[in-house]
Image (cartoon, rainbow, N blue to C red):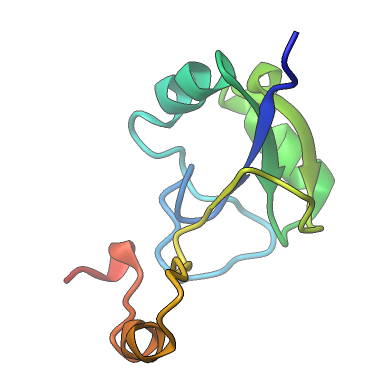
Length: 113
């Protein structure tokens, strides 16, 4: 049996409606379609929630939103994974000049185009 690949998924801005207004005591509401998204991914991949928030708070959020059963772990540590899914990421394709342009033009999706 082949080992399942791991996907690390960020919490804020990917699974919830984070809009840049950080409140350490309250996590934003779940994003429409997030539950179905992780349910589908979980069929073929091991999922790990990646967040800089308090781990217990993040686990409670997963439980409240009925997604806890799809995640193998919750961590703030970057572990070896097949893919890192984050709203604040740029994929490096080997071209440093293009990457600099991507960095300079970067906008998170929740700020609009």
